[in-house]
Length: 266
Image 1 (spheres, rainbow, N blue to C red):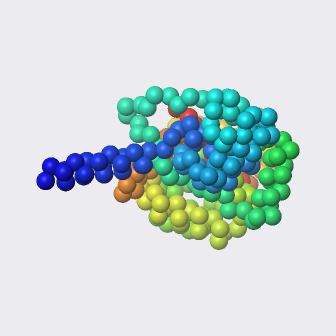
Image 2: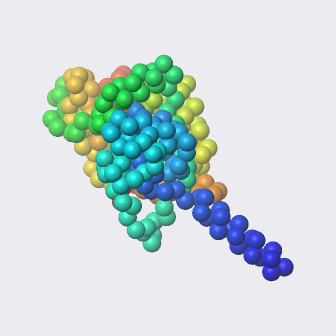
């Protein structure tokens, strides 16, 4: 009986261990993803795919191509040493947490082109434009209307209603996270998978929405931060993201034509 209890305790310990992801690995995955050198899941788990991506980055930077996360490589990628775990916030689990954390689904030919550009310039890291000038007065946009759009999107994103999360808010094709321009079928499938992966979802807007003019006169960039809490039967995840949308008026409504998110490290 005592051996049985011991085995059970070891099983629980093993389960708890594999349920936690390594924060440094997750950050490296994020940084290599930005550089089009890594295309897999962002989950904090070391994999052969990640090791190969690291080797390519290290070789092009003139570092020893070990495939390991050494101090020089981490510093080059702007990856900070993980902070001590907070007592009231569990570490992120060993699974994608954000919609943009899942492996990129792009055609092989496009991936080859992106990898070639990354080989030529491994330091190229595109970033969303910060809010600057206010939108054109010709647009029917106000802080209240934009905030209402965001709040409604967050509330619908907490439900299991896939059409409410997709057809109501997006204008297709939409520039969808790291997957580029996508149609309704792709977005509906992706949202459906995410809803099943994280059946319990809570989102809270944590600061006022800022908005600014985009390159085109009929488009507006908006930025906002949210706190999220996700749960399924085995896992629990909490954190914050900074979200970047480009919106456009369509038939008297505002529609999202580009969407991106960035995990905020706390």
